[in-house]
Image (cartoon, rainbow, N blue to C red):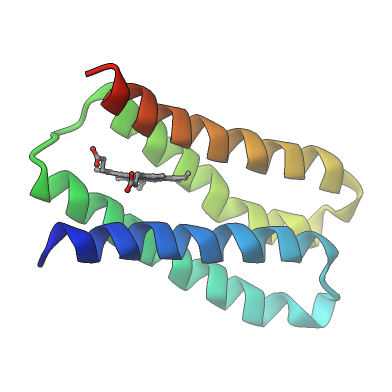
Length: 114
Ligand code: HEM
């Protein structure tokens, strides 16, 4: 498959994952099942796109890739936590933003300083 497909899959799924994760912090409890399903699928597709790009570009496992995988694991867990720990919403939203920014720095710092 073309890298373009993996790029669109990777970023498209990450947009959906990010949007629904923030929605989870304010959504009513009855939406939990549907939001967990959507974020679960988005998380999986983001990883398929990311690992597809990694394979296409023969990157192996440099440190920046491992950091991104850790960010992805954290992001994937946050929607569930958002429903369970409403009292910690402020902290969890800050963690979400930090994980997204760290993943972005990993891609663009690596690419632009190469
Ligand atoms: C399983 C975890 C992840 C893997 C294996 C992965 C892998 C990759 C790879 C290999 C690339 C291509 C880099 C290049 O073009 O040189 C990429 C691009 C990118 N990734 Fe990830 N990534 C992961 C998670 C994330 C997360 C959590 C974010 C959240 C911000 C993210 C944001 C991006 C962005 C913005 C790009 C650049 C797209 C572009 O410039 O067109 N990735 N990723």
